[in-house]
Length: 317
Image 1: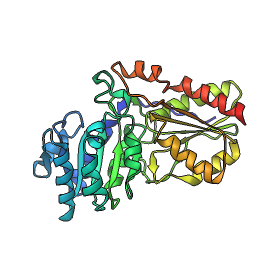
Image 2: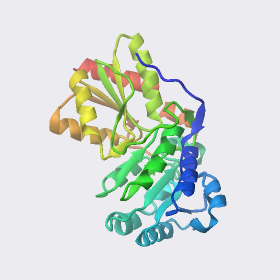
Image 3: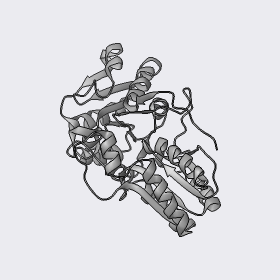
């Protein structure tokens, strides 16, 4: 079984900052807007290097989205930055009307997604943002797994014409994907080959899926792990080709099982290849205060939960 080496724990939000810094040097049309969280979003270096292209909007997220939509009319490529909860739930009307409906080339970049925001608690965590954003016509939805992939995705979305929601996180997590990778929107990445169960994971759960695959292998269950970094457009073929071989699937995400990656995979299977599916996700609940590790354990978003789900899926075949 192919294994992956942790190159050192890094936060994915820093991958966004690194990608934005590089874009500032290579694409003069890129502008950045932030809602009073420059440090948290790792936008400091872009601000220092390009003060004429950085706009501190303050705690006025709806205004930030409206400004970003306006920038596109002049040919600029705006990247907005704030917490995922404030990037989506607080400004959904502005995103729907001024960005998605109008087809504006805005990149909505959201940190501190999911419950791994941690101690700030339920009011700052969001577990429904993927559902909110993927239902908007024309919106691309990306949820990256580590520092390197987040940096590559940040650079790639600047070249994509159309609205994008880029979701990443706060905690330091294993950095295991290639350093100088090419990010292809809508193209899943098969990480391991397997014959007994497909594990389709996104974001922070991709590393947990790889760890689960090791445990399952020791138990005699061969797991195929697929990194779904783009939830919309979803790589239907990658999922179907794998499940045709394995006969069952586990979906894993730091999001509510309602409206997330799991439901998108269910749609693909229901219309093409009905198969047993188990969901590793939060169960229609808000989060709470706690360390990221405590919350991932309590809400069943880790490798042990994926192992249990995979065993159930295999048993249902």
